[in-house]
Image (cartoon, rainbow, N blue to C red):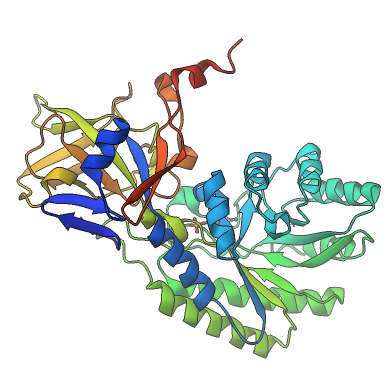
Length: 430
Ligand SMILES: Cc1ncc(COP(=O)(O)O)c(C=O)c1O
């Protein structure tokens, strides 16, 4: 298993941020999401320090969908990041955290009138338009309230990035955005840019998630610039802002070969600068929206092993006190992870196990076929790189309680999201 910065072998026991995971489990006595706060902070800094240019402003938006809670908005605001939100819930959470709502961009492919009204109530003034009805909603709202709203139009570049079907977003039949090849788009842009209460700033493009080929990002950037130039010529408006989305792939297992972020971001900036120069467009701001690459490797899930079972067919299971409710990604798209037994990290990996949870589904699997030391009841298992799209995708299936979230730093643990109580499970029942 790869040890990330902040993970240490302390005499055969794994620690994160100076906190021994055996002590941590003894304190909370239940499975937990754990985050290395220092790694999270370092990654925020890495993005802001390496995605910048002297030719234009840059803005890093954390993609809320990766993991949204009050503390994450407080943390990213220390590094001057903005955020995207795809629901009223994400905007509400940011607002409650005291986040600067001017730095929130509201996304989504089916925003309702009520959600758009709520966005304006919360002080969100950047809306990423995905379709014409929400454009009319926001236009009406802005007029009615006599406010100015910034809008970007989500476009679809048709770039077919190599990633899982479910997380590609720019194929020609994707549900997101408007195709740059659809001639009708120019009339829409003309219309949008002529509304007295809307400031049409430019375009948003996101080609998918967990992408490893930097060429896909560079190609998409070129397409966005070419399209922007065409718009500027045809519609005679200035394009000022381009949001190029997120999707930078991360390490889950040794099968993943992510781009080295620092050098990638530097090359990315160079490609953008070149495109900006050759296009002659006076783009003032470039935005990116990393989610997974900002937070995934900082998070892990700590479980206790309840026991092992060997099936008649010979498969050996380790059962943990969690499963598909806290990590549905294997069930969704056979996502792969690494793990270790935290109290046995000096021991040799001598057995092949499948890690399964306690949910009433055969598909309740976290990792298939992983080599580990001999496991016993009471051992602790850490599954790494669960920092993105785990807590945010968690469910209460089987009336199981969602896990708490703990941040670890400088030898201290800090509970930032409490685990569900039994009462929480019925709080909305009448
Ligand atoms: C519009 C948009 N921006 C950003 C992201 C973040 O992607 P990732 O977490 O892969 O960086 C997503 C996720 O799919 C997205 O849909």
